[in-house]
Image (spheres, rainbow, N blue to C red):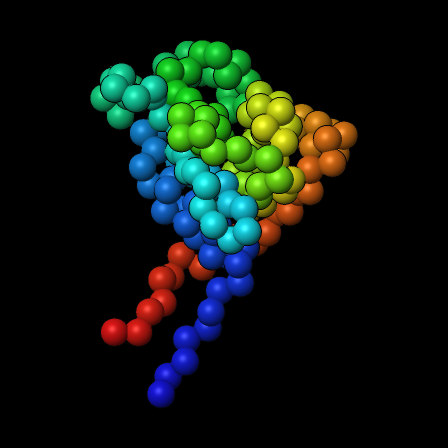
Length: 160
C-alpha cells in the first residue's frame, strides 16, 4: 500500500492560509491568515473590501491608479488586511487570540503587527514577505516568536 508524506503542522496550516488567500479580492496580493491554538483553527481572514462593499475586482485598484508602492500609505486602499479580518472575525465570535499562532501567506504590515501585539498572539509563521519590515522590532519587543518558512508545496496529496 502506498503511503503519502504527511505535512508537518506548520506546512499544514500554511497550506490552509494559502487556500484562504484564494478568497481575496485584492488585485495586488492575495493574502490569507489563520489563527490556531493547540492545533485548532480559531479564525481566518483574507484581504479585501469590507463585507457587503464593492471590491477592487469590480472597481479597480485605487493604489495602482495613483502609483502607490506596496508597503506605503495603507490608508489609501478600500481593502482590509487578512490579519485585520482575522482579528475582527475572532472578535465577532467571542474568540480570544491570546497565545495563538498566526499562519499567514505574507508577513504583516506595521499596522497589523500593532493589532496582533495587542491581541497577544504568541507566534507568527509565514512564507511570504510583505514590503514592510517595521513589524520585526514590534514583535521582538512583544516577545512574539517569528518563523519564516519556505513556501509549502501547493500539491494536495490524498488517497482515493
